[in-house]
Length: 99
Image (cartoon, rainbow, N blue to C red; front, side, top):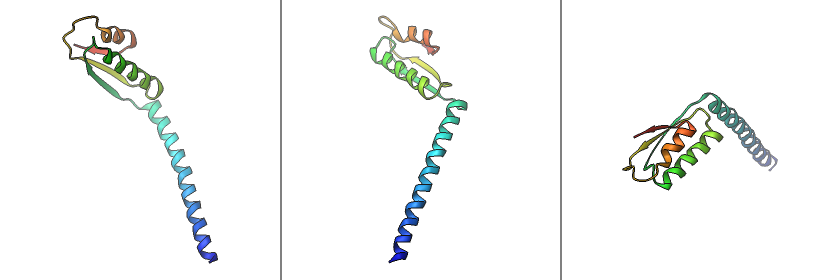
């Protein structure tokens, strides 16, 4: 019976050690990707629609919090009727705007 409990304890120790190593790896890998990695996000939408403004704001939040090197491109697929909020936001926030 003593060998059984020793085996159970060894399994818990192995799982705990693996968990600690995995967490450390995730922290280091995430830090390296954030500092050195880059990404590109392309958004498609009608610049006059309020949903496009929300998409751009969400993309800016992701860039600010997780990937400072991410480039954002907004592709206009609408007809351009009305005030184009996406075009103005793109000009202010450093987003490439394509018509």
